[in-house]
Image 1: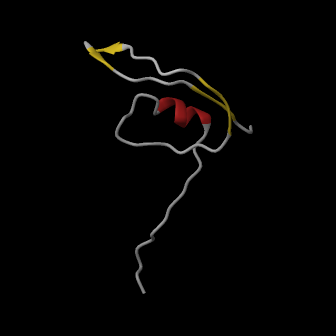
Image 2 (image 1 turned 135 degrees about the vertical axis):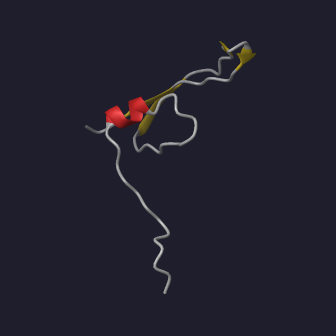
Image 3 (image 1 turned 60 degrees about the vertical axis):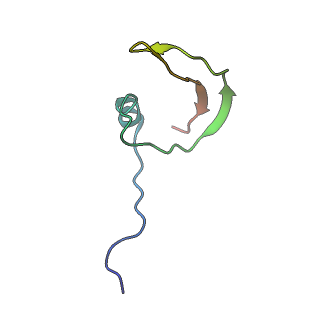
Length: 61
């Protein structure tokens, strides 16, 4: 039997999610109801265009 755990999940609170906002190394999964999707924008970041889409989630507190 393999002693290495295959799956791990840990809930993050809102502050942890907000603190990871500009960390592009790790992704965060969220559970909520998608209530709004905005159009894709292309702002300039460090002189290069980036694609940005804002999503609005309804999260249970």
